[in-house]
Image 1 (cartoon, rainbow, N blue to C red):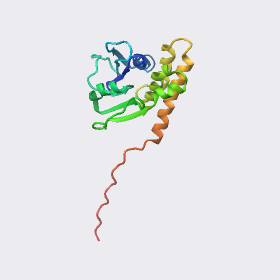
Image 2 (cartoon, rainbow, N blue to C red):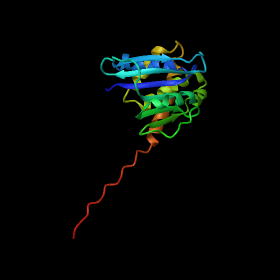
Image 3 (cartoon, one colour):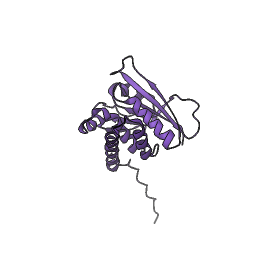
Image 4 (cartoon, helix red, strand yellow):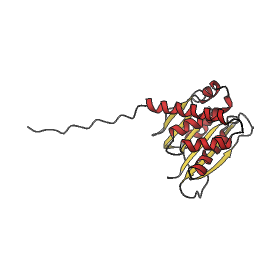
Amino acid sequence: MERTEIRVSGYGGQGVIMAGYVMGKAAALFDRKEATMNQAFGPEARGSACSAQVILQDTKILYPYLRSSKILVAMSQEAYAKFEPEVAADGLILIDEDLVKPKSPRGNIQIYAVPCTRLAEELGRKIVLNIVMLGFFASICKALIHPDSMKKAIEDSVPKGTEVMNLKAFETGFQYGEKLLETAKPASKPKAKKKATTS
């Protein structure tokens, strides 16, 4: 596995750092990959932009900071505006569709949207929106971190007594991603030109 740089972003209070922590833990402890996680906060504890930088690799990670994100998870408009420019031209962006209005993607960037805040509210606990997003991430990026590893990391990381709710939130996001992938149309390929025939 090549070095994969991921930025999870949003505002304070959305569980951004926890989401990054769970990703790294799932990869390192349960997928047996190398992983690092760094975090950054705005000047306020809640409401300001914050992010978690997660790097995954099969071999030892010598430089634990992002150069160019392969994947951006954006759960607020401010975070999207701030970090979208750093995403690689062939990268991937996952957004909360109710909170982020993306611009036309650059290069070959792909964008997938999930209403993670709304889905969390429907579960009765808005606080689990980050776990819904993790489920969505696990579906779209299942080749990167195995979904079962993510579930194990969630069980091992959330407060005792909340495991069932958090796993339900994960499954909600995961199933939303699976349905989205089923309906997503593959990029059309140009039709092969017919060879000219001679009489």
